[in-house]
Image (cartoon, rainbow, N blue to C red):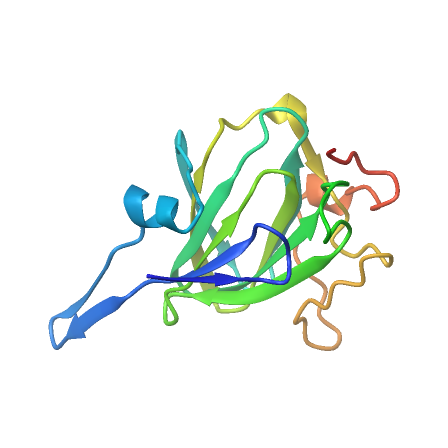
Length: 182
């Protein structure tokens, strides 16, 4: 596996080795020793799988207590994956970064606790898988506005297309008003 630092402190792009032939492929997506050697010592307690149609935007989500680190990947289709640093003590506080994750490129992303996270589905549909370091806690979940002008996230939406949002995601708070981490 190749562990690639990103512009956001602590966020790591993971490029696993893919072994393929005429039968298909094999890829190792998690191995505790390799991740620990790369500085990611995560204990996962929950796995999630979502399927969404094109131009669905999920996020930007985070939990203020029971904060979650997430190892995310795409099993089918493609997404534009975005993280926003909400850690006041981070050198990248307030910055965002995005990357394409797809079933074709096999990339994964480590999102440490203290970041807001979201995806935009760019293929006809996408199956999105993620492992979490703490349990989902609805009372602690928050949503940062996907289109906050302060952040200026450049989502790859075609001209004239609005994303499909849940009611919760449509009501996301501004960066100025959202809760932050130390």
